[in-house]
Image (cartoon, rainbow, N blue to C red; front, top):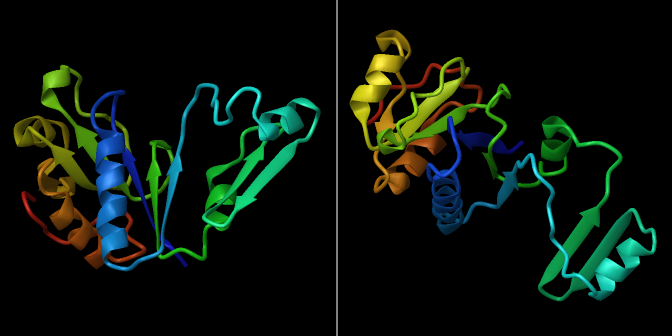
Amino acid sequence: MARVFSVTSATADTGKTTVAAELVACFARRGLRVAAVKHTRGHVEIDRPGSDTDRLSAAGARTVVISAPDRLVRIELPDEERGLSEILSSLDDHDVVVVEGYKRSPLPKVVVYRAAKGVAFPAGLENIIATVSDDAVAISDSVAAERRPPRFGFAEIERLADWLLGTPADSAGTAPAGPGG
């Protein structure tokens, strides 16, 4: 079964994708099979207008698969948004799954926070196991000391990856003491 971590934040443009991509790279360098899941609330345009796969989809195909020696892409038009658990169940042949978003899910979370954005640390999130931030004080003010997760700087993603791999897979928000914690 894959280890799954969510990278989330209070707002957009805080560096979630940067942190998620760096974590993916760190895990891949260790020889792990890594999957990534990105959640968005908006429309996704993945196909080039006028391409063969776009034409097949426009003709009525609910699923279009394009296969090449170096890639396999499956484009689906579901009747409704798929649940995270269904998506994750299709990735259980991986060692690690890095999820970006899904902040209300029960997944263990790495919260990305930038004080310069002028937005408070996200309240009400469950299962925060680590933070990546440029400001330890803002997090300290927002999270009770007994539940305060370890904090990593934006230049410490390699250390965060090491720490995440050492965290118990069934972590429920209580994590061993780590850097900044």
